[in-house]
Image (cartoon, rainbow, N blue to C red):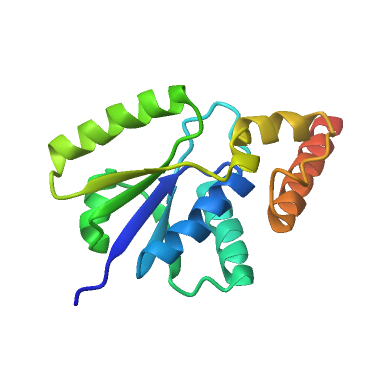
Length: 172
């Protein structure tokens, strides 16, 4: 029987506990899960580079012992990435209706380009459904406690990133 591979793409800037919840749960559904980290962020207030985001996620995946999860940089069209990885399924997280509208549109576009690739919509655990990377960046930028929103490894990196930013701004 062929190995079943899924791809979970995203910006993950930074990865939240909601994202990680979907990684853990998806890893139980598929033989191989590839977390595809967008090489560049379209977000105007990007906090981390693509390489930093890949490194962060790899650290948490290793800490959790998720041996069937790989983390790679996404630097092409998602459907091309899926073909290259042998994946027939794209995992997308949906928290609220507005997420669904956007994700549905993207799924239809991907289906047009690659009808052999399905999109699976998953909801995060209820306790994490309100958490967004934007919220994490905002709370952290004002010195708020983000420990319930992100893993310990991500929290350390967010703190270091903000400290470096403050240092740069103080040196101006």
